[in-house]
Amino acid sequence: MLGARRANVRGTVAAATLLASVGCAMPRATQRTLLDQAIQARGGPLPGLVRSSEAQVQVGFPGTWKWRTVIVAPDRYAWSVETTGEPTQYLFDGRVARAFVGSALTAEDASPTSAIRSHARFMGVMLLDGLRAPGVQVRELDAAELPPGSAVGLEARFPDTGDRYVVGLDASYLVRSVEGPVLLPPFEQQQVRALLDDQRRQGRYTISYHTHWLADGKPLADERTLDACVLRRTPPASAFERPDALPRCP
Image (cartoon, rainbow, N blue to C red):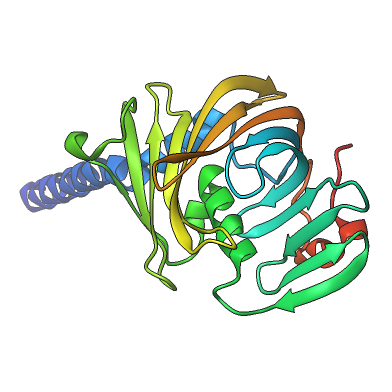
């Protein structure tokens, strides 16, 4: 009996030690990162976002522009710009960039240096979901590294190009600024910064309706969203191969 009791004591101590070690490890394993908290604060992962905007463009071709964008993280993107004739449209399916005038294909580019590919990546970062792409290194910024006006922030580096992006978040973990490299033809690659405000609810999501764009520290455009909707499901890459296949608001 004494031997059995000693065995039981040893077993109880071992079990208690195991539970204590598991209990200490579980919070670390289940602790949400700042990126997780920011996505949750926004309303959760976005299947995709469709927006119609009007922008006061200040460089290149200054004036009032109207366009429509479709963004699906990490890197599917469509940008349709209104013109006096048929719209000029740029599509990226995650592999190939295509340009259209109306529905007519005018160019294809599968190179890693296409301009619309850099736009797609920037937009994926802005929506945060693009930071969950394989290989992306994300870290929380120290207080001294934070962008102006940010309570907390993130740095992301992409493995294929080494490009660095900085995301500033407010005290509610909503995106207030994004900075990173973008190709802006006919100019060379520039450091673009987007300042976001006018946050509005779209169902369970919070979407920014105003973006002030800067390129290398100088005003680029002031964009106001006229209409926006969150897609109900994530469309396939093939939806970004032709303008008529692009997802639209319900």
